[in-house]
Image (cartoon, rainbow, N blue to C red; front, side, top):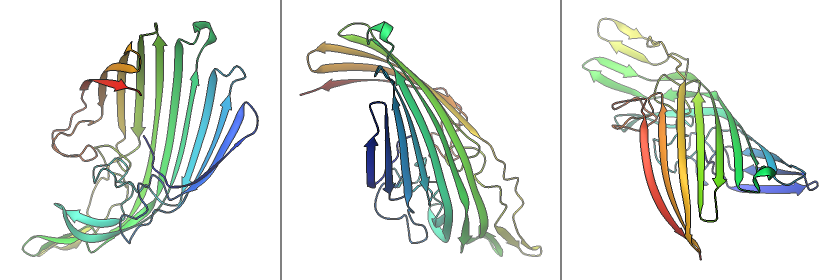
Length: 295
């Protein structure tokens, strides 16, 4: 889960075994210096890290922390980016057409820890690595002017105030073995989960707040619209195996197979963060190869 920042980062090495970093950046996962719109800002984020190196130099443990005064603002890949749903500030839409204004206030906390170990008994041929992730986004958002006439005399509105709370978490493990000068095998397994669909996912909802209204001739206005606001977590898994071949000097050939599965991980008729299309828990298969020449 890569993150984007622009800002200042300082580092200090206490000794051969401990070093630390401290920084200030333009919000959480912000891919540019602009905001999505005037109704939500990037905020500001503080970064901190502590890295510990084993006395033998063959193991590292890194702890990384982020606190942001705003939710994620990553516009890099469009409306289906995994970080967009928690940044709900902007324009409410229906069938792609703007119908209202969304204003948001939220904070974001991320803790990421990773470590690696090269056991000395394997003469540098074996590598193990692990990673853990915990993220929390909390706040609220309001919708104003999001009304549309769905039938003669019948108006549907999404206006209201909603809470926004999401917790997401993950873990990964990696291993690589260099059999000889020209061949290695690497393997990786990862898990990513969440308590609802606010951060990512394709089932349930990201808020427990009922909202909106519907006006029907003869029945008046019903507000809020009755809904279960079902909170359904997402669980995604992946496994990858990679073979590397150093066939000649400066040239590396890699062949890879990847398997993904989990709750509604595949939505071929829409974005992967929406419950649209023919949702499936997989499995999804990928195979590829690449040639890398260094000079």
